[in-house]
Length: 386
View 1 (tube, rainbow, N blue to C red):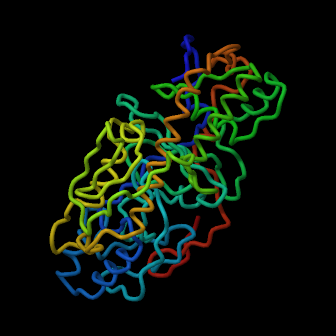
View 2 (cartoon, rainbow, N blue to C red):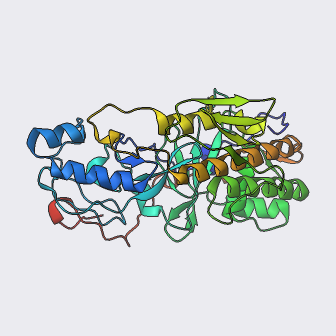
View 3 (cartoon, rainbow, N blue to C red):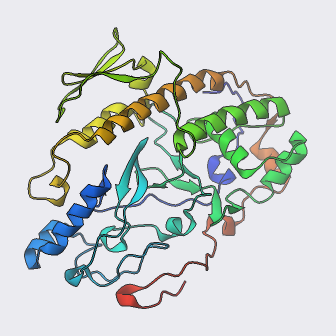
């Protein structure tokens, strides 16, 4: 992490004041690594009747087959009670299901205990979500994604308060004060990039008035954002360092083992290499990312549940995703030495921001903005009043 010594660094909670608690899905089956599995699960649910449909659904206190809820913003799912629902599966959407683990979700409010509609209202191609991770465990304190994050347990801070990349979720006056001290015009994404590159355990973000240091930090943070978001050109390691399948992966791999001497990842008898140690050791919240990714896809679910509907063999698409994940983790690990070189000079402290009127943040900035351009259907086809 960056070398900083002062204790008056602003908190991320003040720099990006609006935050939302994580989603609470309530059941695992509406999320899967493959969209086809979700459509098959939906079909199985609707083919079942009475107690069988209820058991497959896995009701909770928040959601049963008789729950009456409106549509998720921007999602054309049905609103009739699931006990009498019919029709095709709502088109699955890509989400961040776990750190660096992109999966698919059925975007239906009736399936999710606590869906956080305020996040869905601002989720579009312009949005970037900053996701806090537990700060008492190894790994980066802050992740970023262009996908709707459904992972737990950290709070979610959207970069923009409204769709279309408008009204940044930053303390009012922060950009202007930074601009006056740096002699340049920073944008909202610059502030997020700087935050990702410099955030400390405890989610303090040291700011600087040194324009050269700021530029280096933003450059490092933008590369981290690009790698974490993966929404542009696909990342690649230089030739000779790119991971390849050296021995075919089995139809149903059960074990994962890393050989440091060979820099090889073994999936049973299958082998992928080279895999840098930094990629294998990459952790978030104290959990190895590669191990968690593999376990999610290979742990046998309870028989007879909707989660048990999944590919019988390892799809080729998973191999491609695994190779890309190794690449992303390896490249992110290379950025860490650059972070350590960001020696803080000319700090902009929380005390300075209070003196400039940026802090304390107005309470209205901590609440979601009114978003009135979404047509949302309420329960049983009624119009929703926003």
